[in-house]
Amino acid sequence: MRSRRSVRATLVALAATAGLLAAVPAATAAPEGPAPAASPSAGVTVKMADAAADRLGADREHLVDAVSADVLARSHDAKELSPSTAVARLAEEGREVVVDVRKAAGDWARGVAYVEAPRDHHGEPEGWLFLAHREDGEWVPGLEGDQAFADHVAESPLVGKAEREMMTAYAEHEADPAAQPGPIGTQANVNGLLLPWMPDYYMTLTGGPHAHDSATGYWSALDFAGGNASGIVRSSREGTATSMCGSGGGWTRVIHPGGFSTDYYHMHNTTYYNGTTISSSARLGTIGVDTCAGGSATGPHVHWSLRTYDANLNGAYTWLNGRTIGGWTWYNGNAQYAGCGTRQGLTACPGTAIYNRRA
Image (cartoon, rainbow, N blue to C red):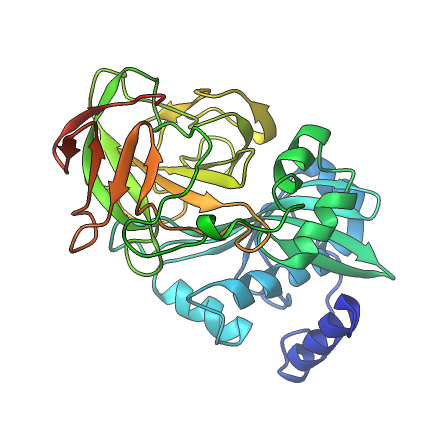
């Protein structure tokens, strides 16, 4: 089997052949902002904490290049295109590719990367936590869901003890077949996940099960608004939280024990988290219309999505269909947004106020 370094070297060589990897000196401008035009990551928006920029020095451009290449290879809208073509086409649609480096120590770096959602329809962007390790002078990044990320989680000093346990506990066991996406009626234990507000309060279901990007993939998302919970969005369970758009952005991801994680989008007045341990029902923000990473929202609501965090589907959006969350079992409708939840003989479809229950 070829090493990750050798595979990456091959990819870099191919990109260089395409004229994408011309050597450039270290940037001397502020670390936040678009990459220089001559950069291997031309067109990618780079954000970098000052402390991380200082620690990385001139090598920060190589890190951004490596992460950008992986992001564009993984993105649904970019993976079959060359990096330059993908970034250009996304830019034509008013969409950015963002690499946000938040921490660096020794030969390690950590951050968030995402591809903005189209701004002409409702939906959530594609985004990943990333870890990168410098091996023999070359950066080897890992994005959520790939083997490099799992390897880095086990070794990186930038992953705290509690967060490492959250990320690895389920992956250390063979994935339960019942947790795999399946047809209508498939039941799966979601380990006590609540809906995204306080227990025993209500919000109104404004959108039944739909794809996280409102376009393709498993119908993993629900939309909620109003109610007597004061519009406050809270974590579905304890875990480790990351503000995907950075401070003030309306998108948070929480990784829970037991093989699942959850996404929350369109919030405002958000609390900033960066791999932070939080409790169940921790305050994340309030319902809003934020589009810090693309998409659109016609009225204040929270766009909530369910993701796996297990060995086989690490960091992938997954079916809500047949799963019980907040005391309600959710089923797909005949179209996106049309599905409903059931509880103790009651059926709640879009437009219905529902209480968040622990069981």
